[in-house]
Image (cartoon, rainbow, N blue to C red; front, side, top):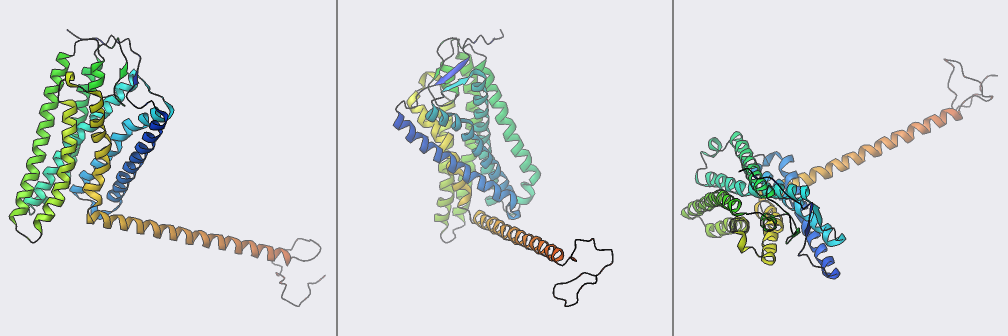
Length: 364
């Protein structure tokens, strides 16, 4: 039997953020700083990857996609939350909630699959370096990136269509700072058993599959590095792969905990903390862990900055030169007007130009 949306709810209200003005202001400043730092880090990385030819490789192509996702994820949720903290605008329309839910699930799902692709890319680069250029071509990179985005969008479309075709005819207070799957599902006044079952199966299979690929790839990388027995290789292996795995586990653990469990276990207070970990913290840490600690990225940023400084100096030089030429031309025109024959008559064509430094008196 086909379900029809019988919603009587036209808007939702976010609750759970502090009602104390002093606390709201403190949270607003804190979250605003986190948001600005996240934007700055990921935009800087995108500029470096797009403008520096040394970073036009498969690894940085995937990192560019990750930075784009880390720009979108907090942008979907945090502006509304900042507005609720500062201006107390906690309402969101039904269609606005649907769009926010769809966008967030799409971005989170795409990042889950992209992290698995990035782990596989690093596995091939470390364990099969001679075959890496032939295996991981730019064509394959484009196909993998397109596949992750398409899978994330389709997964989000399934989630959103299952949730928002339910009936919402009662409470409209969402125990979260954005429209997320568990708190929205908890407001439905129709049966959610079949919806939860489908979402649990799909999210469990896709999420656990991506997680397994990621973990196995990093385990193979660690084993390959440790087998080489180079001096200091243990420190390098655990400092690089350890930080990557920490961020991956943080993201996978929090997203799987949020979406792959029954709604009966939903806890508003704890789930708000968990959602902030993958919605705010990982987008802030990803550019630092994956890229800004990288020597190639640091060199690329230095080249970009030096290029910008040279362009500014060059533009300043030409601006000063143009201004100088303009002032010189105006001075010459003023000198010619000062040398014009007395009486204001019009000088005939071919008549000599009278200079002030000539001692000869003009005729007539």
